[in-house]
Image (tube, rainbow, N blue to C red):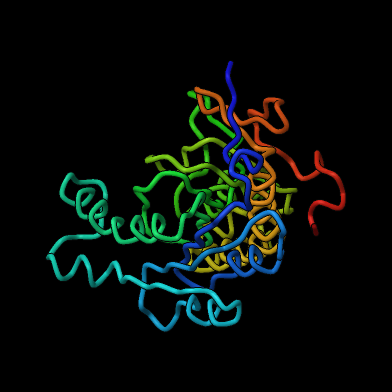
Length: 267
């Protein structure tokens, strides 16, 4: 089976060039930038919203980076189209919307898109996303158990005792691309029995949101920049079937931080 690195620094003769896409607080993007790696450089930040709640411009100013915002809500409202990719019309509109980002990626010579809390479906290839669930967990049909926006809530409802963050190389499915990394576990700590929480949906949602915020810090902030680092070093590769390799060795369940040298997390 032939494997190829996602990025080959020796062949490129330079650092990995990254575009950071975000929609909200951008904490994952900040962690990517704070790493200050000699192996990659963020070329620009892109946001799908012009809302003041998005901190993209603030982060770009802090790190002296170009910033671009193209509001997807206004894009769809102007055309009278619902924001969905579940219809042919909606998918075509999203592909049209993404052409702006595609031109920026080309103009800046970007090798990889890093989705740090980017809430829009992306039709461009060559992106790494971070997801608040262990995507190595599958059901009896081999389908990933916890995908989509409510992954943390669904994991808690399923009785999972631990939560993990995952990074993946995106495809056109929902959290279905090759699994790159899986974080260390975060224990689920419920303030009441699950049956009691189920009887109070509002409280259950708050518990799930609190766990997701904790998981972002314990999971996302570790594996997201670390995944980009491994790609930049040429250590993560894929074969023709989308199986992930670390240093030439298959990792079907994703790379775990414990496999890596202790100093790499902070390098």
